Image (cartoon, rainbow, N blue to C red; front, top):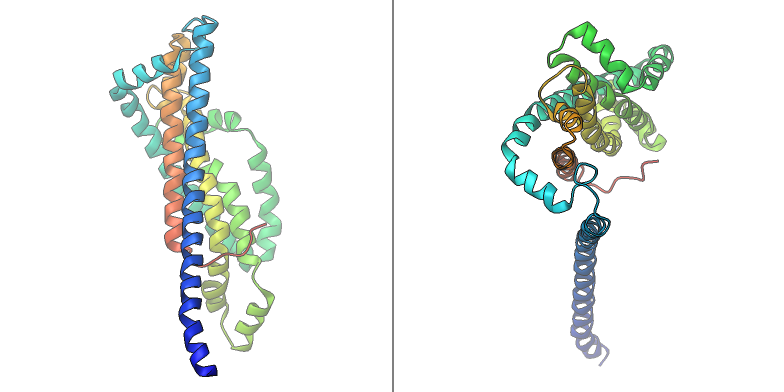
Length: 281
């Protein structure tokens, strides 16, 4: 009788589990759509408020254009905007690669040699405290008026956050895991690649997502000094001409590229970091 009762109870348990899973999936889907729709609804509300303010207070177009005027400019001058986005995108991407590669290499040196870290980390901090608008003219004088100073500025602005996060990730390993590797007679190279690098990936991608946005900012700021192409140059030109619809459209294009770059790094992170990382402090 006990065996028969257990057999009868199992289907009921399976049904309950299936219903719980269905409720959990439905709730997860609702939360996912809520996270997607709420920002969209907030953006639409802000745009509507912007349009109402411009029309109700009769704000002149050269002071603040309406969203419709900006949208018309985006469509009408799309070709010019894309032509100027291309050099900025190239500068930001090259700066992103160079700055992060240099930061990872230096963080690796810091982990392997504390003397190097103690000697050079204060210098890195000092260089990072110099404003970007002060670095740009110096680099233009040193490198000329080509793409090189723009890439250098984008690289510098990416460098420090990645260096700090990568150093933290390489050093903040689990002491028990580190002791286990040593007990197993692992070499320093094996500890680095199989433990430290593995542990540092969540820290690294946190920095890379920041760098994806700041590299675009660095490239745009660098273009304010001595160039005729790029999003930064287009912003300066629109400002001097009091062409506010073009100014807003250019800012929108630059910001959209920055967001797209950020989400690209997020997608790569999801493909690479497939485990549940520990909280990054």
